[in-house]
View 1 (spheres, one colour):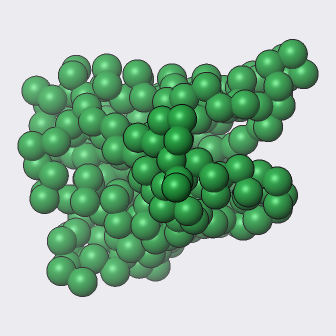
View 2 (tube, rainbow, N blue to C red):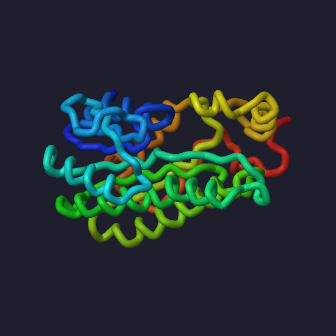
Length: 249
């Protein structure tokens, strides 16, 4: 550990499980005060823990406004935002109900937009900040069954690029991580053996990634080590995006 985030205030959405929890832990180990905001968190007010869990529904504007106001009151600043909150749907285009499509968009894309707006308003007060938005390799390729999820994650990529261009002059960097298959509690439930076998064929490294491997990428992009990097999409995917039609020999 290098202490690269000492003195930083970081907000991680989806921060109590899976990838978000790994990012929160990694940031805290590097010295940051972390607010782990999640719809499954029990706390409704900010605590003083190094990783402070607090309830947040990213799809609701008032929830986002209230949380950022609470961060302002307690800490007076926000240096880092990581948008890890998200939900999935594995349904074909014709079988995707409109309400499922709308809910996936509400969390994955609208949520990134809403909490991003509020966070940026606070970051502008100090003239600096770093935002890391999580997309997916399904937002970069037309993977089967990802009509809602893939489209929402593709939207995260373009939204982030627009943010990067518009916010660069304000001292705020915005980048994207697109994970491939990652071993999370949710994946353990929804990925059956057939899905695992398929990923195994098309990921050149031949394995699922670990949440900590995404956290390491997030740490780099959020830290001053990436001070001249903005508007970029980093696929942390074992080589999936670069694989083409034939990936494993």
